[in-house]
Length: 141
Image (cartoon, rainbow, N blue to C red; front, side, top):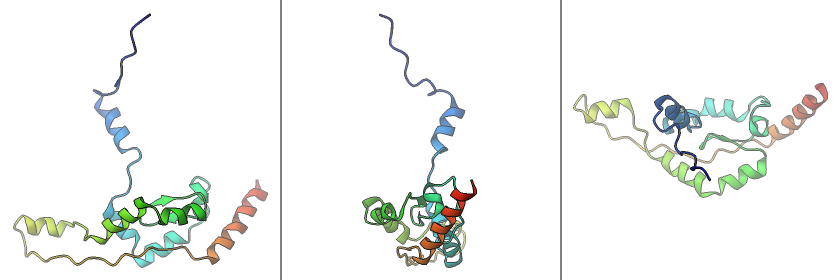
């Protein structure tokens, strides 16, 4: 019987370690707050069909920046602890560049106000349009 194979093969290789660390990195909170702005949210909640995304890109949770395979799994996600934690973190003011400068002694410190965050649901009329688009995709192939 031989020796066991060595573990942690890429531990020392810095480039592989960094790639693995950032491969599936979630979006930052300040990016998600920008997505929750009314114009951007409207654009994200009425997407075109994208075959590469789960559920053809039609079921998106804006707060978590995740796509779901169908509407029932999206509704189940809204009740989950992960989603509720994310909404709670989004209610806190976002750390900005101006705040970091004021903490360092540059400028005047102005306390930030808490943003108003609600759960954003997709319009129901959009689901019928998606069903038609899915049928045309399957026919065209």
